[in-house]
Image (cartoon, rainbow, N blue to C red; front, side, top):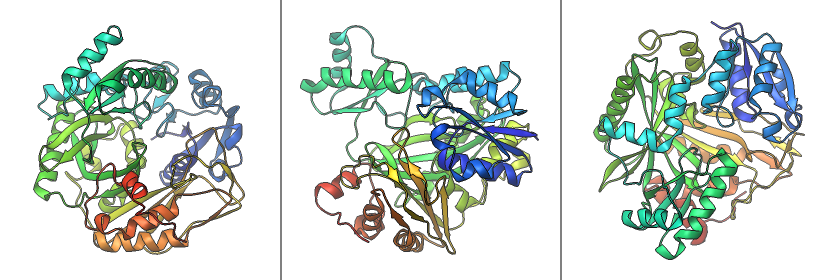
Length: 453
């Protein structure tokens, strides 16, 4: 096991990792920006280093600075959390060159999975069903438009080298294609430093279902599925385990197939196989996220497996047969809501001071956050300020617990999406499991959303 691990991230995931390392008896050292210096997890860690100013490229995304800070602090490993450097193959390689263990997949897998077209080709070769798509779009604007048009409309233009909803542009008809390609390329370059794109057939109201995998390079095990269909701006906002209103045998068959393929490939860490699902077409592969997901807590709640600890154990040489049953049994149901400092109707960030910040508590309720009352939500980073997780004996009980927990969450100083989330918990379609990826926008558009206290 490691002696000291550098936590190269911020907010909720940094707090989560400090806690996991403490449970393992490993010293934690947080690497933070000047903007995050006052957050509670920085003080909770065994030590910290301020990397630099708030802009990510001057702090969290500076590979050399992160490695130097970790080495200066006497760390023997780096955990990148999610986002920032978590899927950066060059950073993982640099860590190895400097004698630091990167707690994540090997650079080889980060490179393959970071290229969305290459990962799709790999999965296709192993027999995983895919959503129809192009390869990387090449040539001039006319050639790219022709290749997209041959796939058919509606389309989703996507970056080949990134995820998280950044740079994804829907195109419903040919007359909007040229502007969409340029917009997507610009966003991809800003977000990931690459302009390469590919196109995928756009399913207008599918389900987003993902399968949690853990592998050590030889043995892979699945930890069942999560439904992440409720999204805004193509980013997840509500997740649950397991997935409602899909036959259990279909889910289990897909989970086994995903784990089998990842094991055959030799994948060597925790990862998530993401799919789109509709009753008519079944599952279609989207991508593999080679890291811990924001929504990992719902899987932890129904399996009893601490995924952050599992990552650390795998990276320190642990083997899956010694760490996990195959698969871990499911118990109950869990729902997670992401709390954002944002306008709940336009879904735009709302930075500012947290004059009041009092999370809920109680049996079956878990809160993950990197903030405390008196802190500040800055404009430099993603506006997620907390995750509320509710676990019940069944889905209805978990939803009821979530509704009550959200009602107890007191936040003043910034706008939040809590009212929207409470309204969603009472929506008949949601309670019946009729979730899909455009549900949030439809609720706002049809005035099905009314602010709730």
